[in-house]
Image (tube, rainbow, N blue to C red; front, side, top):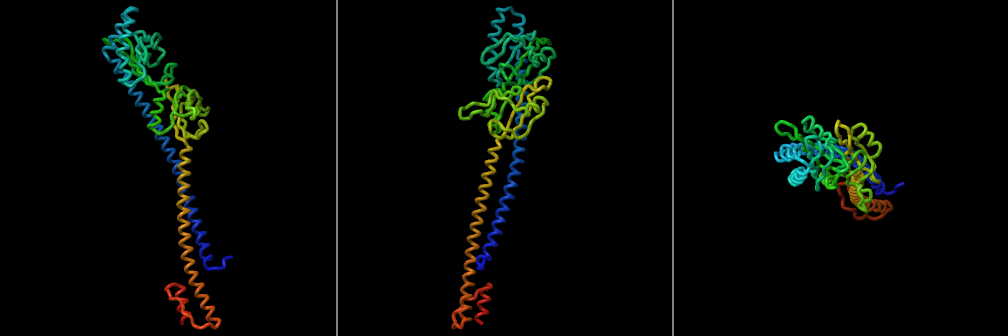
Length: 358
């Protein structure tokens, strides 16, 4: 098939080089994909553990805030004045209590505090504006503070705050429980999920039950519509809300594939009242892998081309000397006169040249 020395040497060597480069590219690609998959799993595990630990820290801070406000002597005096006052006196107590506690929201970095009287009725809910008039006993943490003197923390969900971390502590005077203070940190805000997303470089969603109430994901990114009031998939609900277990798997969300981790946000008696999602785009990881493979192919192809050029040039030079020597031998064999032979070298062509000259 191949008649010249050049092709007989060059073609097999090129085939071997191509196979070696292709084999190395395939091996490196497979190794990188496996590494990327392992790294993705480690990343989601690390981020989910960090997220869980951060929420625990927020719960501890909420409990500390409730203790601090409940231990404030001025707050105790306001509650006492409320418990002993008439309707007109209570009106002024509310106004003064709101003015006193409004600054505490910024000081303690909470979204709301709830002050209850000796009967568990809400004196005041301190938001950006005052609310009052219902019973605090609907909150298990307030109930525990009033009737058991306990300081407890749990996740809570109301129409005012779809998902929050809430803690309550009893307010005592002369050894008697006269009321309670609850401190709440809201989770269902864009500020919370956006900050969380920036810290962990991941997508974040907070669920009330199986309905999203705050998310960094978009249903329509072009229109800026966030993925709020959307429902978690059934397999996630069954695992997280029904069984109280985390869900860790690939999942498609709004047309994109994610490596997602869901874990329950448990309310009173450890019953899940919501979920927390943190996830990473699989498309970004795939794009990084594709870039790596492309660069690897580019480097391999460039190396192969350079090696081929060097080899072809080398083989061409050697074959040219052999061809020239063959013409001389043929000339002499046909009765030609003496001709000057090429300068002998130390390689095989040189050996052949010296043999002819003798």
